Image (tube, rainbow, N blue to C red; front, side, top):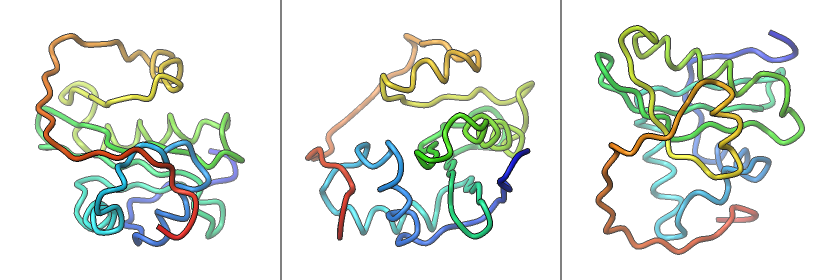
Length: 147
């Protein structure tokens, strides 16, 4: 597996925010009630996986699932210093298995266009059947400091 270990564990909001600064995930959240919402995310998400190099958090995968049919990956990120080592795909595979496995569970995610190649390489394809209802106030920003 390389120089990291994958665990099923919760991270604190502070640790996750610090991690976001070292990844491209730091621009996927709205500014509105950022800390409050990150605290809810880290405390309640159905699947919470980490990749660590010693104690350093180098990868995260969060997903919501019914453990019967669906898994939606909400967050999949790798520390920029650790990309290209198979961490993202290992986290994704472990999440899929925890939810019930590829023979039972359909995997969905929303992607940043910069990540399309990664997901396509793993066999994902775009799906026109997904619907969205969005009434959320959303001010774009990137996690960089004391949010």
